[in-house]
Length: 311
Image (tube, rainbow, N blue to C red; front, side, top):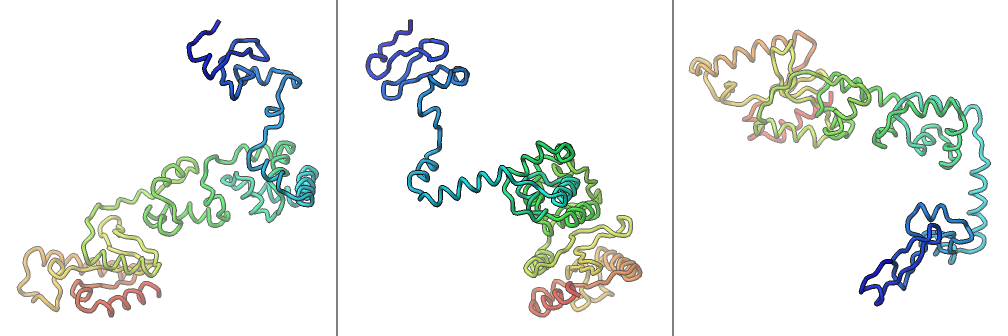
């Protein structure tokens, strides 16, 4: 027998309606069953009205305040959803969408198929139709909904870009966070671009050009290696290359005399000439942006960069 000094004050001992086990409950809200198993085993006659008519608070308010016409329309729509059947063309469209391999959400399947039904008919179709059920099982799980809303062409373009471009380019174009790149890659078997990108600190002139490109919604690749990893360029927009040159290290001809250069400046100038020859001889265009122009002629250089990047 259960005993406690607090029971006499605001608690009481009752018996479970199913297994007849002693249980402690509050007097204001007495317990009928000791567990969920006993509640399920209990016959319907022993269940209380609260258990048999379990409705949420919002539904109770709706049924109390709603008019008869609204309630009738509600039940008519529910009854229609049980009798809706898909046509053969609609079923074929649903099969094609499931064959894409990344659309699993029922609402999004109906969105791609241009069907205005509710969720219940398509769930019933997945259960009853064996072919649809098998295709649905093969669809990848836990793909973000905004990716499922993409068309099949956009999804294939995303895979191709991921194999040829770096993660920063894909993040700007598709607005996918960097953390989800590798999780998606494991599920979809994407071979991510293995191009080595050297970790180089961003200089102030490079930051200014980057902000100019981003403010004008121009997609670019930064610190891209070319010529079999021999050279590295600052920015690539399609076939247009932008090189941001520092005045001292790259020896701006407006400031420095080439006959009085240091050893480091001479090496950088020779390397820049060879890089420029390779770029122009391999189908690329080149724009050199000097540090002096960004600081002293900002508006003109800004227009020049935007015009060059949008050609």
